[in-house]
Amino acid sequence: MPKGYGAAVVLFIFVYVAVFVWSWGALGWLVPSEIFPLEVRSAGQSINVSVNMLFTSIIAQAFLTMLCHMKFGLFYFFAGWVVIMTAFIALFLPETKNVPMEEMVLVWKGHWFWSRFVGDDDIHIQEP
Image (tube, rainbow, N blue to C red):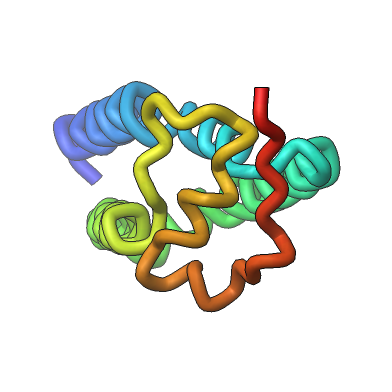
């Protein structure tokens, strides 16, 4: 491989990581801390951290092999996953801005998809 191509690959890896950290990187930690009810927040966060670390290690182990086989296509592969993640967030994750933690269950109850999984028995709002 010519030296210029190698430099381009390193540049694309740098750009991908920089953009991912700036945009999606923190969401895997931030969103679960906002959407879980208080009763299950610690369990939900621990599962989130475990799954995050598991997939991070799998991707880290597979990245070089995938790069050798897929070459530049690997960047399209990860770009495709970013498109899928963006569509999932747009369709299935309700807005949590200015929603108190105690009222998150109402957000899930009012969502077009998740409302079928949240029953009236799950709503326990304490009046101040």
